[in-house]
Image (cartoon, rainbow, N blue to C red; front, side, top):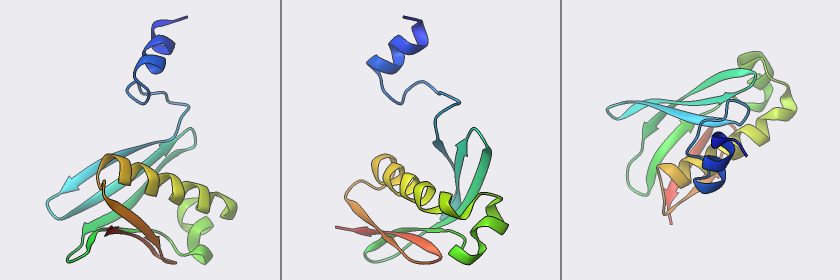
Length: 110
């Protein structure tokens, strides 16, 4: 077993595996970008912090605009936005739930 595989088993998610999807965050005060990265490239999604019960909002292309905007197939949208929601809750917004609209993922306090 190589050292990379050993570390991945020991510390899941701690070693960058370029073959696995991941998120990178570029924060700029109250807004920024959540960047989805995978083998096909990068997809930046604008985010801003919310107010009240809404902790954050990530803008996503509407279903009808997904393929044109992202250069990804329409059927990849659900998988990618679900991945983003799960990772953001785990890494940035614990204690929140994701609410999906046609143009955003809203992270709401539980």
